[in-house]
Amino acid sequence: MHLKPIVFIDTEIEPKSGKILDIGGIKGVGSSFHSNSMVDFVKFLYRSEYVCGHNIFNHDLKYIRNVFIYAGLDDTNIIDTLFLSPLLFPAKPYHKLLKDDKLQTEDTNNPLNDSIKAKDLFFDEDCSLSAGR
Image (cartoon, rainbow, N blue to C red; front, side, top):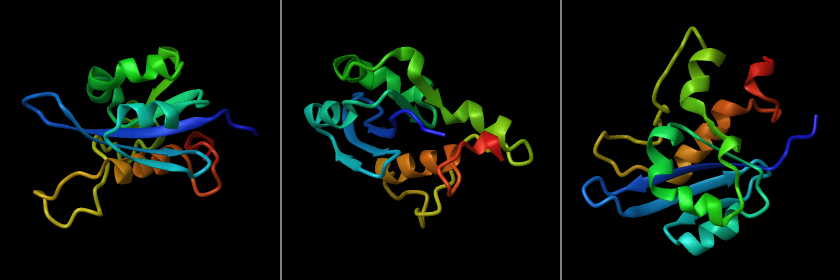
């Protein structure tokens, strides 16, 4: 099965100001992004057909929807693993990504690591959709 280009993303936002502090992303082919540059993020998204993230509808889109528009991405091609995880794993319906890279709860979030976790949730080791299990 040939999959169309997909990118997994996550953002780190300053809660009070709404300022984008950090963005992480990984493409299905393995290239990654970790910066807060909107210009570079648009370039990274270029040629992707789908965008996937954990809680992307209720969080990330509020802050970066315009970036998707500039990159030529269609809103109908956005996937949120928050809604997929209980369907794919009904015995373990986690609503949050497991943050095993964080040793303490006050550690700073890492959007690149969270993007990789969203990718891992969506794909198994053979890059086939988890739903095919």
